[in-house]
Image (tube, rainbow, N blue to C red; front, top):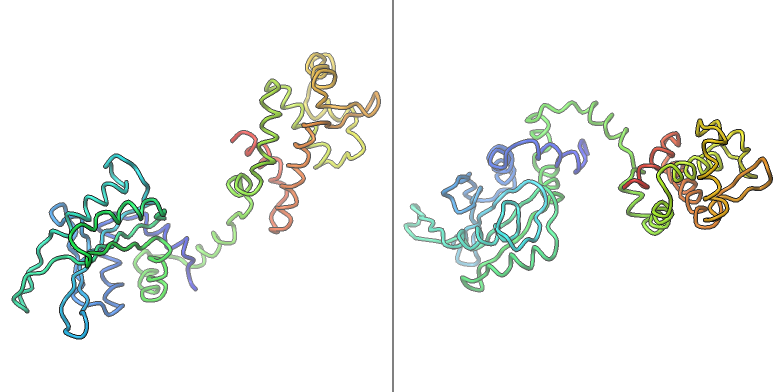
Amino acid sequence: MLLTKEQIIQHLETIHEHKMANDIFVPVLKKMSLKGVKFTGGTTEYGIDIEYYELTQPDNNRSYVGVQFKKGNLTYSSRGTKGTVKEVKNQAEEAFDKEIHDLEGRSLGYIGRFIVAVTGEINEQARTYIGRARQKGNDRRIDYWDGERLAEYIIDYWMSEFIEYFGINLSEEDEEEENYEIVNEEYLLENFKELIKKCIKVKSTVSGFEFDLLTSLAKLEVIDQYNGGVPFSEFLIEIEKTEDYIEHELRNLISTLNFIEPEDENRLYLNSHAKNLTTLLETIICELQDAEEDTEDAYELFIGVLNS
């Protein structure tokens, strides 16, 4: 494969929907040997961007198909605003009313199948709601092509043309793919939701400055590997403050909240619920190592998810 599906979708979303339909998917569908493929995009075309027909067996009657292209996800909304499922449902109902004059067969036909094609995703709620547009008869169908399917069609039928159309430099695309980060804030929030939630609860019980003290102590424990307790002098150097300056906050974290435990007069370590901060930072480092990514980004990710 010369491009990933994600890369193909990213390029598709850089052009207008009508241009996507006319310049890319008209030739793609023709390469798939579909019949009568033509671009019909426009405000007067009942929301249909591409039209083609299928031959029903055994009598070879024409069954017309209309395809509408949209960028992004298709989401549910009770309002008919742009990009919502209700808007598409209304357009599907209009599409089924479109008259198609078959000059060759001297007959009048109608759209029998409506396809919603989006570069993103279509959730099940949206699919169910759109399906209620089937009010013209049991033969009226609404189907869905999501971004992954659109990318598959391009990979299977039009990859070299796609690369030429966008003037893609494959070496640059490969470099971007190599630089893609697996372990990012989105990944951590999805996979370690409960642990992050526990840490954020700790954050909600202290002041911003006190939380900075806790995260700095976690960094020293994990990244600088002071496992037996962080030397108080190193802690002061890390936060760049004097002992007098943090006296009030430190007393609250130690005596009132028990978030910091003094190992002895000269060493500190996180305690109680604040220990979750150490666990989270250790987890992020392990995930980066498993993904063979740079662990230097661990603390930045750590702070990022805590501020999400």
